[in-house]
Length: 105
Image (cartoon, rainbow, N blue to C red; front, side, top):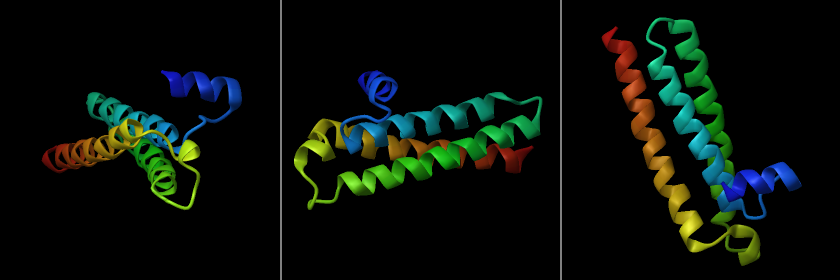
């Protein structure tokens, strides 16, 4: 929630890890909404594609925050980086479940 507040005030969070986490959570949410749209495959596909685009943004921010050449303050705290990495794992699992859903139906 702090990242959302910073984005609303400054246009971007102060740390790259917070931005990575923010887009990772958007990606996970988009994929889950896509799975919940059982009645419309078009809407489900739309949300799945949104999830993929948010995942790409999250990966860019995550790669940047792992760059040791940047100042530590702009990279983020250890816990923020760890949460971002673990969220990327969740995205992978969610996308696999979504792909499995489409192959079964």
